[in-house]
Image (tube, rainbow, N blue to C red; front, top):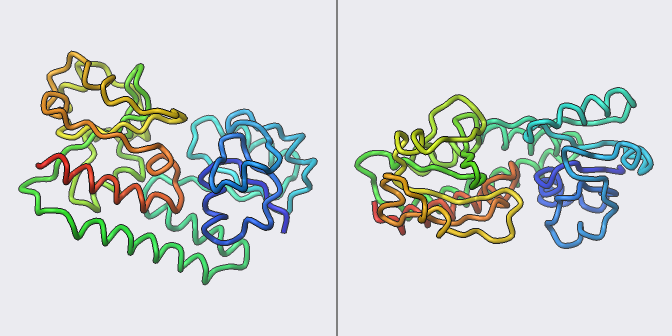
Length: 253
């Protein structure tokens, strides 16, 4: 089966399922594992070149709606009659189900359950090292610094935090949105996680220099976690849970 992936998370799902041999093209942001960097590129997720996709003669294109704006790409696939599968995860359980759905489509249902089981095991191991919190620590996960854009309730991040006994500081029923200084102070996060999308370097000092009266910043509880482990709804979220657990331990709450 000839496969094309239009998001880094879908590419990593194929990797975890052991299905990279069928992958003939990827989006520009797919960078893991290393071997996918050598595959033909079809453009960035929001500006996929459908002519390139079609030229690769895919039997199945793995698309996603996890990036706002990708609806246009999916509509283009439909118009051209290109076989495709669309993942649209909002919760952590949606991510698990998406992996199982892809595995089923590839005729690898057993492998899908193995991948999800391994993720759950890694997450459970991370949780075992945590103390019992008197109350759930409030954590803000920042996707972008200017303006501050944070993960909302409709995010797999919320489930990752809840699994560790913490809570998403941004309770809005949104996937993510920009926040004003006044809103950030009202949210009063106790731990601040930087996970800037597409950034090669995460700089905690940028957050620490903000003139905000926020417990996390006043106590210096700012921790960088690469977007690859929090922002991509795929198998590496399990490692993201482990890193969130490490941040909670470091915070001393």
